[in-house]
Length: 76
Image (tube, rainbow, N blue to C red; front, side, top):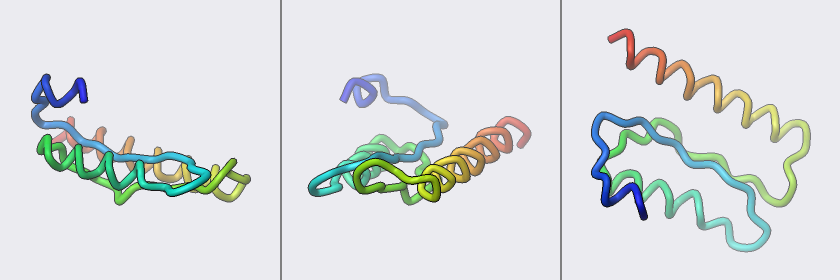
């Protein structure tokens, strides 16, 4: 909510999180990012409960993709 007041420009964003019940947070965050005109570069990562090694690897891969997008944005 704080960021909405800041009105950021030229930003990239992605949401991720773990959940135990409904898992709605990633979708809500993506909607908020879109409303702020932040370029959502990933659909998001929703992990139920505590992530296992496979899910943690997915997190790392998502981080690498985000890092590449951020790096590419500085070089274009």
